[in-house]
Length: 272
Length: 272
Image (tube, rainbow over all chains, first blue to last red; front, side, top):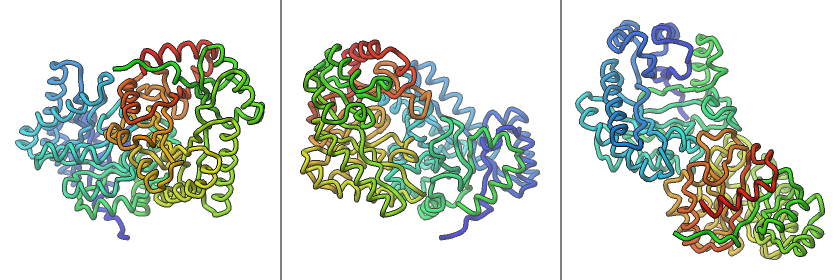
């Protein structure tokens, strides 16, 4: 057992939905949180260049940009448009100094899930030169299988690992979110297999049953996930980067963000 | 492609929640549906012996009894009480002529999911002599991972197959429900691996996003599941038994059951 390092704590902006970019940067600086997991929609407030400047001034860094992906589509034109949008996301990640673009693969556009999975692979492959050029890593994030129909056809760490292996590029890695993988009987084997390809680690907790399909995540310690065991397995696999707290939950959003940050720090230290 | 056999169609009583046992037997007989997936709470109306008599008179058979399981518990006494209840379920299955008792493993009682999984294995092992004696097969049903915290720590077909292999008994098999396994990248490999240990097959559909955690299943054809592909893979694995339609959905429950049966037959033929 090892205590978590507070220097690795990152606030993913999904946790404090009511804070814009300026408020998040200032709030994290005040709270002594050195990293922010940035969302693209939040970048609209200041734009990437000014966001980058404010981050530097505040001494806070972007741990990742959320999110790219959403590759499957019925037409070639639409798939190309999605890839173009991912290129813009890579530009934004480079501009704000985020080392990682998190990829949520996207849902199937009809019943052919194998085809959708192939389109995900093709989409990521198309981005490899752009990611290499910008020095941004692409993090394939397996989502919980309950999102297979509406968010991501990549649903297990085994699948993400296999996909990353096939893409066979130094810029491709996987993002591990405990909410998405905790149930998996093969999670510890797959974390070891992922090894140095782990480029992101996200924490929250699993409330049983989930109170909402999208907004049902719990604060660390309020649910069933063996957080410390998973964090130590991720560490043992070779990951030593930021740990993003990403809690989609309406009650958390309705709480004053300063209180949320204080609770997040406390629970991170106690549970992760 | 092969059309589904109407003689294999079974109405799982979870689809027609507002019908009691008598109404279900008479309704299925009228609709020409030869099988019923029976739930234990529905048996209370007539008791197992009279239910068996009515089934024989109507020319309708029980395809399975739902459900045993729920093994993990914090104390030895509670675990023993759960196993005793499973023995009563085996008695009931034998009395109504159901060849299979479906096992929903149960959730973890704290954060130790490995321990809960071990208790599931221990619980099933304790039932083997009783199942053999009664001539009832035990069907390990992997549930969708979104139920890992509140229903079942067995969440993939791979896990169920491995568990069945370790138990190494002719009375242990697996039940495959498309709703629970459709998202799994390894489902076709695991269906082939399961082979003759498949002792139940359940159909419904996946609506995206699910409108409710428990009651969000769709009627076949209304969602994203490749039903015919899965049914043909189950057939190819060697299963030729009843196909249960099991749709937990408040709207379906609020529809007159005769209409539900007509729709179920139509969609079964069109989609399965």
